[in-house]
Length: 162
Image (cartoon, rainbow, N blue to C red; front, side, top):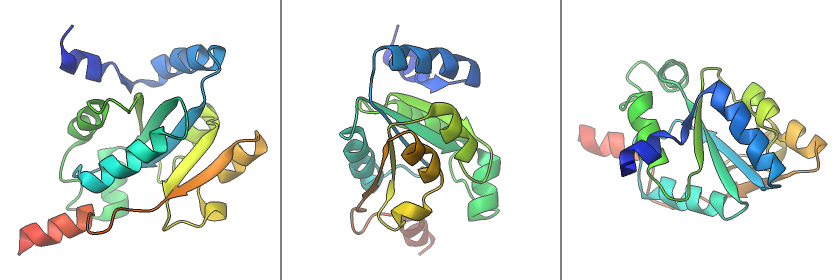
């Protein structure tokens, strides 16, 4: 099996997510969940995701579908389609799983996964993070991570326009 095949195995369907979660829970792994569009992968994403992974044993990324990104970011987004975005993320050694979600928020996905740690950027107040209620109810924790200054997808897009 080549490297890309191994990366593709990290992109889970709802069916294999259920099996994979059962295994990880059996092994008593600490599950870390974050979500986002990750439209143009950049150094800021790498910094954020590696810090998120350090908070537990397994890093699961909820990835907005193309339709969801378009609703959230506008008609010119995403720049990269969901398959390309997922494969790039899955190629990172510290990312364990990618699961698409089409809703405007990952609330139902978080309900299904029941992570031990929920992570978002420090631009969020912990009590306002979608799914915080679910994670807190099971005794988990909410973490925020500072963004690496000077790196953002919107900033990259603006720079390219100039």
